[in-house]
Image (cartoon, rainbow, N blue to C red; front, side):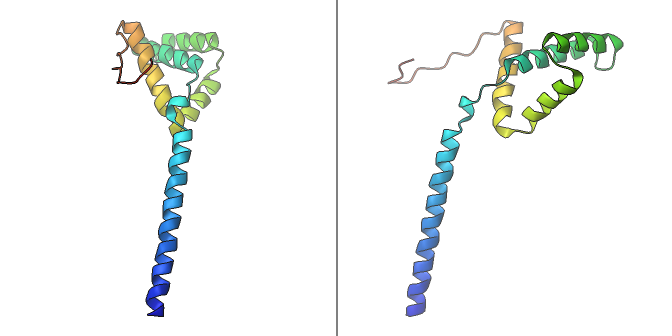
Length: 126
């Protein structure tokens, strides 16, 4: 009987620990919302222009290399710093989605595609 009671106490402690951990994890995730992270718009603009250059000239063409260098210089990047900035975004899960959304919005704006309108929910002030 004592063994049974000890097992129940251990299980209750383990359950309480798991619950506390889950609450802490949920709190941390909520406080670090991906919506709060703003992408570097200078990087977004440079990234989109570089991709457009590669689509127009091909990635390996000498004209593409010259156009890429001019574009990166315009935004204050070298090839190395641009690659490092892109790698930093790719390696950070929290930064990737906001960056990807900003790139998509920029491309859509260049194509003349309007932003989707969010539905207002009952009680929304905006």
